[in-house]
Image (cartoon, rainbow, N blue to C red; front, side, top):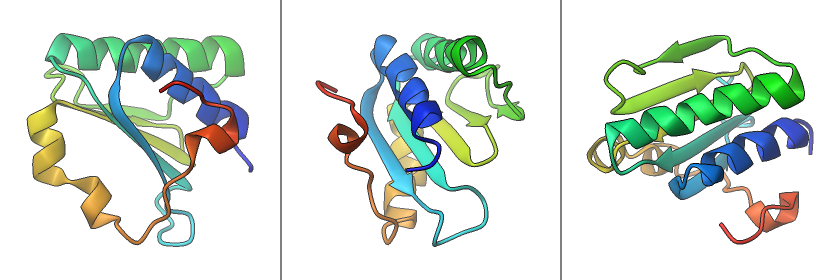
Length: 121
């Protein structure tokens, strides 16, 4: 799988900050927006910001890759981190339920996290 190292780094950083309900959708064949969506939740705006910060910090440190765009950080209800081919969505539970990206992209396959070396999420 291309982008595996970046994907694993993003997931591990999110899980380190106790992200909930982490899902990875492979949207590459469905859209030109990105190859993957990483979707997760934080229980408070403080936690969503901490998750986003941790992802950004770890990716820059370990992958030497800077984010292309970050949206929604100031409110922390839906933070979007754009790495070009991987887009990360960190939601508060209410926003995640409202926008329901998993349903919207329901025909996109979910990535089995164990298949890329993520255990115990």
